[in-house]
Length: 289
Ligand SMILES: NC(=O)c1ccc[n+]([C@@H]2O[C@H](COP(=O)([O-])OP(=O)(O)OC[C@H]3O[C@@H](n4cnc5c(N)ncnc54)[C@H](O)[C@@H]3O)[C@@H](O)[C@H]2O)c1
Image 1 (cartoon, rainbow, N blue to C red):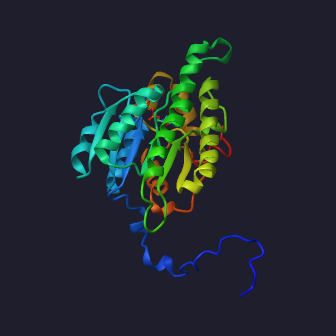
Image 2: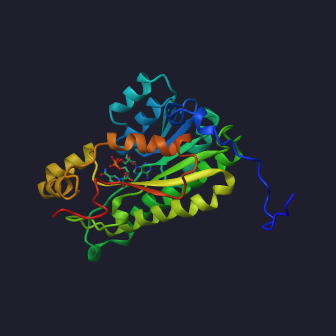
Image 3: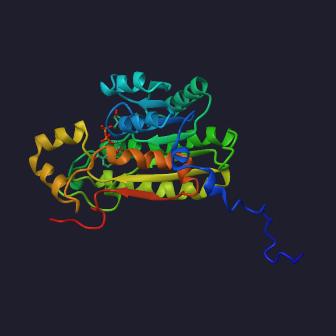
């Protein structure tokens, strides 16, 4: 046998026909998996909960809110999966760790994490109060960091998936604001806090690859939620920007994010890590007005 000049470990010959044995439906299934969603009591996070439930996964939601959006109760009863809501605060490490401990007791494992807890102050840079800036970074960046760490610690202890060898998938919710300033808004802290989230996904994807944990982010553009609709009602010029600036000339619907989040959480993306999916109607590449 020829010598191995690189002195690397010689791996078993891969199954060249493996792709014949897994259907797209199987790859996208989250059946039996447990996914933690921060900020899932309303908005994008709640829609991610529906996407996970429709794919057969169990859901543990972590949120600050006392009362979730009314759709939460539909999520709880319509899909035959386990759903639980934990009132907690992603900025408080001690409290958040206790919540993750309780989730592990209740669900037994964590296969996926989606970090949708976030806030978006809109105040001019020159007038910013340091406490309010710190709050934004605490929720958007540190809250994401803490949640990813607590999920990864648990994933690392778990048995790997038989087919992919993976132990878990983490999806951080960033924003197109990580790439381009938001027209009509003054969101310096939000933009920079989300830039940090994109960078975090890249760094963690590399660092945790040897632990068989994948990390990616999704950067949505302007998405229709109760909050953005309310914002558009109060500031009609923002509605104009959000609907007309994206090259596709519409705001995103939460439906547009359902399959991307399931893809990143599932075995369908087994070889995909350290990436950011920009789902923006094209706005990250250029604007129409
Ligand atoms: N809606 C959009 O157009 C849009 C676009 C790009 C990115 N995003 C990002 O997506 C994420 C969700 O946005 P959304 O529009 O659904 O907002 P939202 O305000 O409707 O939902 C955010 C949720 O996070 C929770 N939360 C806030 N602080 C928390 C804390 N300290 N601990 C626990 N939970 C906390 C809130 O209670 C709320 O339920 C955010 O990170 C946001 O920056 C939203």
